[in-house]
Image (cartoon, helix red, strand yellow):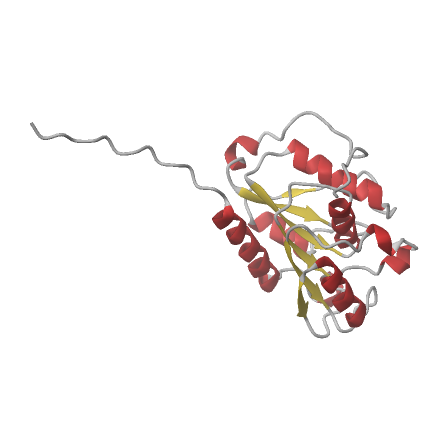
Amino acid sequence: MAIAPTWFPARPGTHPDDDTHARDVRLLVVPGLHGSGSDHWQTWLEHRLPGAVRIELGDWGHADLARWAGAIDDALRRHRAAGWVVAAHSFGCLALAHYAARGGRGVQGALMAAPANPDRFALDEAQLNRALPFASTLVASANDPWMSLADARYFAGRWGSQFVDAGEAGHINPATGFGPWPQGQAWVEHHLQRVRQLRPRPERAPAPLRYAF
């Protein structure tokens, strides 16, 4: 049984661009510890996809699962969309898993790149190990200092994610050459298109009957 996310703060108000993008499936960017700078693939992707939204945190230097998950919930409440796909990186992947495990709603797909090992933050794995209620792609690196490939494969199995071995790609960040990341965009576009196709189509009014006299 899902746990109601009563600990998420509800804040009124919507972003002024929501009228333009409210009927589309949109991207939510969830960075990891210290955020994603101007040279990060998440920022590059955010600028390439109209209507993309980034979670808001005043302090990106303190890894707090509840606060990160609350920021996800806050963004989904503040911005209107027909559906949401998340692009998460590092600690942001753990925050997304925690958000879903606590009963968070509104996400229909995700790209989870280079998740950080919860042991690095002394986190209880029980907060993170439920299957995600949406389709996801987990991309991991063979030489990521934040999580081994074997551990990434384990979490992909626990979360029900499609697992992708990116080879020796480090932490999949600017330091290892991931500013522009066309393949990452392709995975996100795949999830966006899948969610758009799953949306119920509005019923057409029946054509008026024509009678011959």
